Image (cartoon, rainbow, N blue to C red; front, side, top):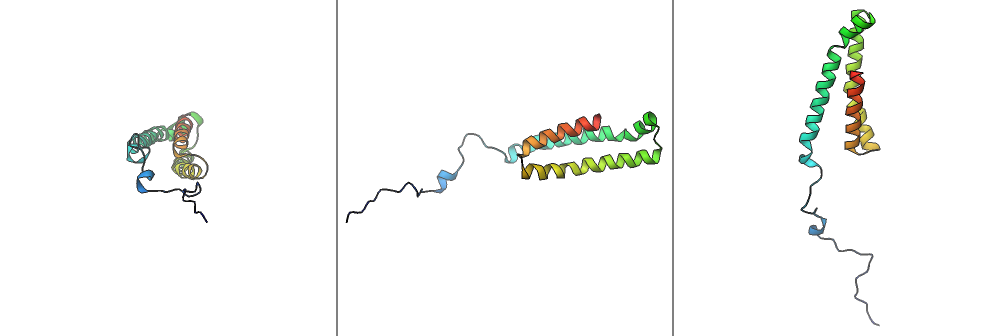
Length: 114
């Protein structure tokens, strides 16, 4: 009986060095963190600026009573606060993180300023 000592194509040898990422470009991690922080800061600033005048706008333009205008403003602020949680669930379940963040920020700024 002759034994065949050739490696099988079904078994791959894996060592620690082959699992390392190439030294070229790093993806994700702390490199993207400042960009996300600045984008979220800009989103917060834009939505705070739009919603801070919402009560006055509702009273002056639509003749809404002040108590009702304050309740509407609180409701809008609550929806804007819950939106990142909904975006995180959608991003985790269906899409990548960055496309959902970009679309959500654009949608939030357009809706809150519209």
